[in-house]
Length: 383
Ligand code: SF4
Image (cartoon, rainbow, N blue to C red):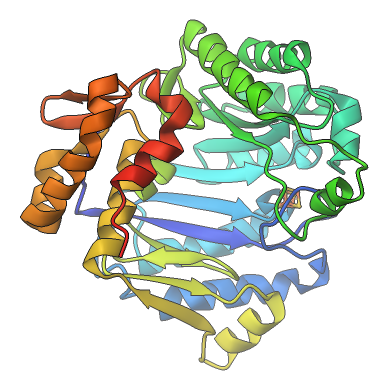
């Protein structure tokens, strides 16, 4: 993998609609689907308004996330693709992903998707335990999820990713192992698995406050993480990022872009953009987003990134991946002082073997991965 591609960029499109809300989710979305047509027009307009944001860099990846992109019609997707192609060009696009919910992926819809430019589909399965799916207010069963993957395969999708969540209420070693083995048996190219987070303000967070659900303990979290690494790597998946596994070469180009300092343009409410010197994000409100775009006054917040913020981002994003932190790049980008600071703080972890140095690159070791947050935070610059 090219570790710092200056010429390529990504586009992220946020599709902020959900039929219902899952109890753990804190992504921005709304159930007001009647706004869809107006939203697609606004999204296309934003793509046009921000034509110069990427300063002519070629688009390598397009990613539809949400929310629930699989609520959009083929017609809506066509409109968006036409705009991207006209304004940015898609000739260099290698990966075009859509996130999808299993309940939307019926045979007829998948066949329509197969005719669109998508070459990667990312399906939110979360767990194969129907009772837990119900508790989470997911709208599908395990059987529907399995069928959705099979239908995508039959329709010709050769790059399928699935999302899992672990550390779920009531989960134990056996049920997590069952989930992992079922995921492996689907023979998909990519698996993302995130530990459940009780995000403040979500319905799940309130349920924990009311003692209606119990959070799993720290030891089980570590154990489940270890099981995941063990099972998936035994099955031939590369553990290329803390929460991501892939068949050789099938890493998510788009998400890897976030970890290797690629520019990206994010459109839609709550979407973030990055151009290596600033981060900016759109307002997390469908109504205000649309009116802002329609009036030619987008509601955006911008944060200029100073040297130490960029250094901290570099530490966190590069150490997460199997490509590691290249010390030469660190010195070049951030200078002697931060380079020495990083090496001094890395030393104790190098001594214990939690960090490894190879070919002038720092990697978190197999043992270190269990305390990766702590290692990264030790290397961060604190004012
Ligand atoms: S998890 Fe996905 S489908 Fe569920 S509420 Fe969040 S964005 Fe919507």
